[in-house]
Image 1 (cartoon, rainbow, N blue to C red):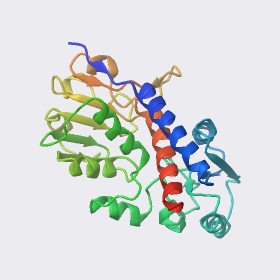
Image 2: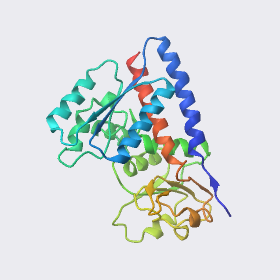
Image 3: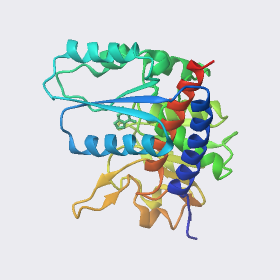
Image 4: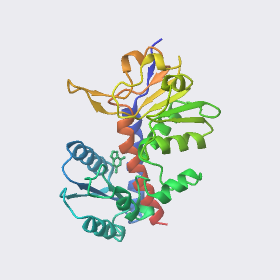
Length: 283
Ligand code: GUN
């Protein structure tokens, strides 16, 4: 068996086209959705991500503002900048690109973002709303994964879902979204004793560990849907996921490629969240 490929690029293009249509309608009501992206320091990967986010905004008709700040900015200055964006009526979404330099308290910075502009969904209020089944913003990467499963008609109701990686950004909100959709969810972390015993039970397996190739074909149940959130650069410079694609595709029923899988969906869902923040501000 060879797994069906889940095309995140095509689905993200469809979602971005739908966003562009809704942006046009909102602009007719006098509101242009605006996203502010705050980038601290000079992490090369972060610069690429931020450039891609701004380009996607422009293409869909959203206003975007990238605020580039030096790596040694004092925390109180950064917090003042965030507070300024909270009060800016042209800005509906605020995103502080992570990771931040070590002297900055990321939690404190995120908690300073107004919850109704927190389009990443990382604020504790938004994490709490998600956990209690009343989400305001769903974190973009897990939200994108849910859209991919929906587009593939993967039913989560009563299914065994296993998430590998328990980060606040991906693993934990992913588990909450699949739980809300009726799955029995197992959330694994770096201490999980027999990881393969867990992953082999999964009807839907989501891997977000940042460890290239750590999930191999022998750890996958035949026919499972495998979602690879990882984006890593191999020694030869190639982009690879957290799943060993070649062995996994022989066992899985469907699998996301890297690149072209989850990555493009994250940006598409950021646009959706920003648009919805602007729509809420316009009522
Ligand atoms: N760094 C890696 N992924 C993300 C994300 O989704 N949002 C932010 N703000 N930073 C990130």
